[in-house]
Image 1 (spheres, helix red, strand yellow):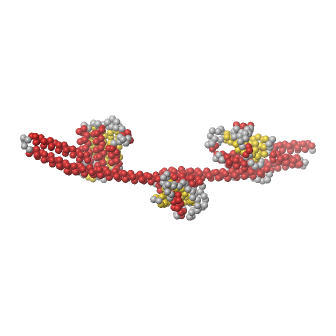
Image 2 (image 1 turned 120 degrees about the vertical axis):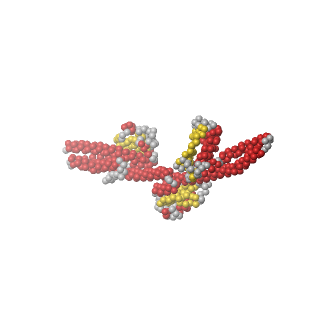
Image 3 (image 1 turned 135 degrees about the horizontal axis):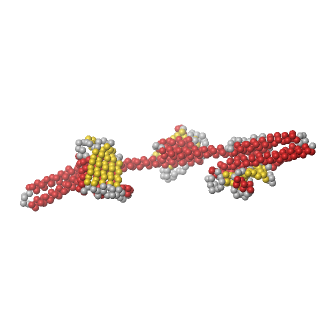
Length: 625
């Protein structure tokens, strides 16, 4: 019996010791998994740099048998703890140094305090490097202290129970002990460990089984509460991130569509549809203001919500004096079928252009982020509207300028034509008549009056010179050859008469014209361009040879004028207003008015080339070519 009791006592001692070791191992595994779970649940909070939320999570975790949760800095300073008095205290230890060096979890039992301390390193992950780019690979460690006193109490109770049952049979006591340990300790602990591992894998819906009201049941309940909070936080954060991502994507797509839109109306319609979908509204309207009145220029959603209240709200935003601009305004009040209204003005720096409004039938308030998104889109639309208006103004001014220039040139040409005709029909005929009368007087004068004949001859010479000068003026103003014979004879005659007396050899050719006459504005423009180019050769080029070419092909007249003179730097001359010649400006304006192109190429010492292409339009047939 003594031997049986001794064997039974040793068996009980060995069994209790084994159970204690296994329980501590389970606690250690549970604590390691718990630290990993807490670290994972705090990752999002750490990334968002929200110490308050971290301390709330740590504070909720502290429940028996969890004595405390502590976050250590690498130097041993307590950065955060479930016990506020420990924050800022330095608690360096060999266990902490080993965890930071090995970058792996480690555990240590502390019998003097009745605790099991488990430390897990906090890795400097990719998402942490925004704030910890200069820190090392380990930012610190998170520790969980589990109380072992309840385990010891439970083991002592079990040992007493086994000792009481030793009297019946050692095997029965041992079997009963094994069953009790497996059912009431090991299985609940295994279930808790399994649940913790599921949570650490991201399955925040996992829950531990609460079978009893003892310490293990309390621990399981604490784990379930913690996992439920983590699940709620993670779900809310995921929804917020998803919503922000969707809004950013919408803004990006809208910016691209606004740039690529074929017209402003399409851009406004796309913006209204995008805002209705992004802000989950029932309708979106864009109001534009013209001459003090507001009108819907784009809308998306329920047509019943567009009027009549929309104009009033838009007027409240945009219908303000320019001296008192309004900032972004959020109007949240029930208005004629709409539960909530959010509106912002369309405004540029110095002008209110209208308003952009979104509505919801249900009374779900808009958030501040909704106002930011709507205001961002409204600002882009306001810029687009203002740019379109400015472009229309510039285009209208350019049209008026070109029309005025065309009328000015036409009036100029008509006046030159009138003056040349008057000189030709009146002054030239008068001078011709004068010369004829002088010739007759010279013939009728007595032969012996040589002095009188000499005087008459001198007067005739002056009349001849005056007539020649008048003819040159007539040709410069409006060559009769251009009206009587056409473009080719006029250009050829002008070039040869001006350049050959100056010692410049003229090479002239024309093709493709046949018996066709070009419209008068086209002939006048081509002749004036050729006239200006030939005049520049005579005045500035110091050339030996000049080449002129006229060609009519595919409804376009081509003019080519080149010389081998001194040339000039085209880029410098055209870019410097002080050096830019008025003749070049006039050539460009004349050609542009008829939709043609003009190119001037030149280099110092390499001559100058003038090339012009001008659409002809309708041509006529004449036998004078």
